[in-house]
Length: 241
Image 1 (cartoon, one colour):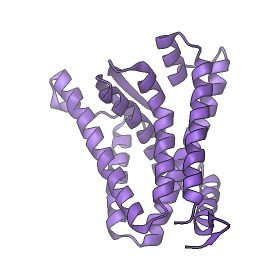
Image 2: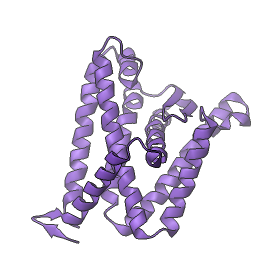
Image 3: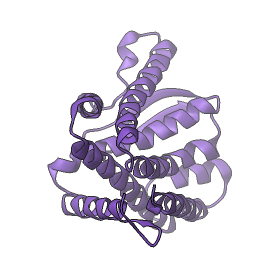
Image 4: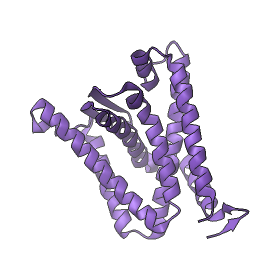
């Protein structure tokens, strides 16, 4: 592993190349599956927070255009509403750190694929149990999105098992960079929406209605926490192994 002055040069090169690739291909179809995966991670973070704080997931929605929605009852509002952006940031930072290690990144892709499948299945079973119909197990708003995410899960497991290490590394870094950047852009949008009287509903406004604390306060707090999370992960990842 190359290092210079306590900095992992190989990691820096991989991070720069991944960032350039993501920025260049941002609006192209090539990154669409990854963008849909980041939306799924965001909504999964909400769903896990709901279930982890005693609530029930009634609906889990991801649509073909990359939007998402979790319908739930119960749970702790502060944890549930905060989980989306901060969960995506934590996920991206963790993937960034794990991507440095060849064995670790293969395990990480397997874990992401299996965890996504398990949580979606669990949320679907909870919804089916609540509504009394197994037909309600499909918890996506859009069956196209459901099919794409199912393909992503299969592709992650296949890449983790069979692909060359270079491909595994590229996938890991791409997921990590995209997750962090998506969380950052979403937080900026939430902040601008919170300070605008014309802004639509978002997590900050939802938490504001539940706590009577202004949405802009939550948006600023989430931005600060997300920045601290990214900084901590970057510091750890920049160190030579």
